[in-house]
Length: 110
Image (cartoon, rainbow, N blue to C red; front, top):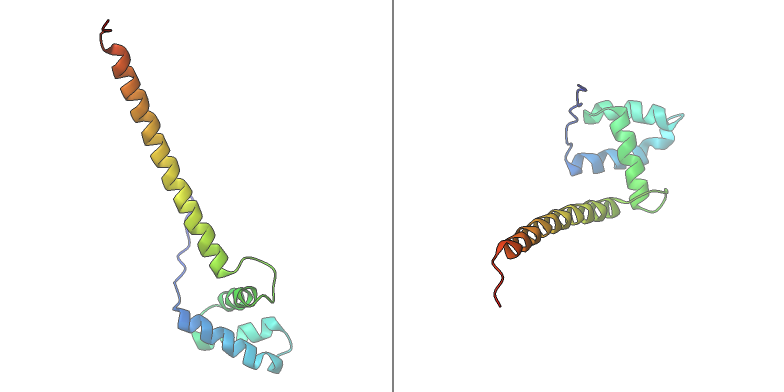
């Protein structure tokens, strides 16, 4: 059995603030990694979390390849809809088979 890690859901305001701080102060550091390591403790998050937020902000702005948050949300909604439709189809198939068997069991009238 594998343990799932608990990752706290940081508020959107904190993520936006972190991205803004990174962008404003990046020039003061030798590398992106150094900036993440210096800024993240001030926000109370890990440097990796800050890095992921910054990369996602770049994707959302069209500066980096990958799915934007809007596209991710759309895919999630479509996957949920597909799952619900498959469940509905399965229920309809079972109901159809049930009523077909009931029809076959009924005596034939001339």
